[in-house]
Image (cartoon, one colour):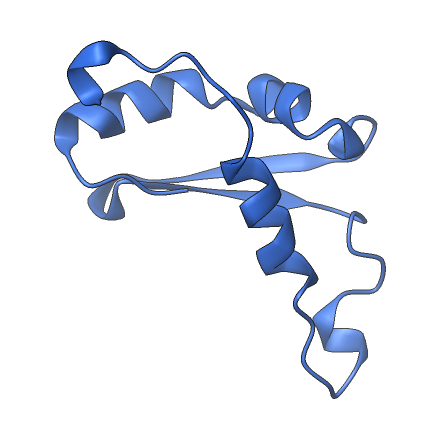
Length: 85
């Protein structure tokens, strides 16, 4: 997940913890989740071990599942400060 402004970055980095991620993506409950903070990109990357099965590296063909998981996360609802809207 990434944002465009420093203000939004401060909110995202504080709000989207591993625990909050698990609330938003219930399929990740019980799986190891690692959050990578990328402040210069204003981004967070989440690695969920086992959620995509063997994953893209297990096959030679294109695997769209990870992108779909990102879109699933983007579709979830959070209370966003009005100043960021």
